[in-house]
Image (cartoon, rainbow, N blue to C red; front, side, top):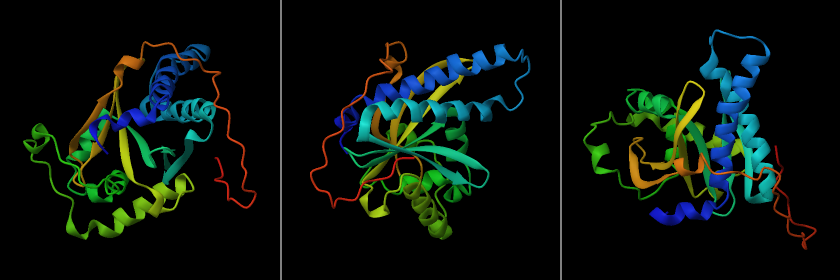
Amino acid sequence: MEKDAFYVLGETRQAIVESLRSALEDQMPEMMFSYGLQERNGHGQFRWNFVITALRDKCKHLGWTNIFGVCKRGAWKTPVLFHTGSRYLITFMTETTFATVQRRKDKGKHYLCGGASFNQNVEPQYEQLELDLPPVACDSGMWIAQSREQLAQAVHTSVGEIQGHILVLFDVHGDKLLSVRAVRLTPDLAISTEEENWSGYILLPFVSDYKVELPANDDEDEDLVELL
């Protein structure tokens, strides 16, 4: 994927940013106000339930452009999008969590390495080379293969049909979404030269009731992909 190939995502980019913004800035504060909550125990983890719901809701307005699912990792579920136009998987993570995962010595067991393994011929940014990140252990192949399969199953897509992976990183302080960017990773989880800043979408109005008309299916024998 070339640097400008993020544009193939089209309106998916703004839908993703609006999903994050509405979940973090509107829905979570509204819930806390409604129930008179003053403490934030578990706030960072619980808000993912709102993010997942918002992504599912916003993406359904884009017809079959996106297939949405969740990848189960133990008790945790992480949202996964599959963009049919580029055949790329899209996953999500906070900037803080990503920085922690990058420096883990056992990061080969993290699902993110499974996603990054779909990326071919990506080069790390020069600044990333200077970070001297620990490499993925040679014996991590089993875990990476398992993660690839789990991510693919989350969107009901065979591994062979996936062309690459995009990670959406966002930074949030309190109830304010500060930044959003889309990056592609190397197998060692370094940020590659393929990166796009989506922060400009945070302030743009989003038409939530917009929906793409689905094309008619002329082949009655064609298998349809099940939506979650």
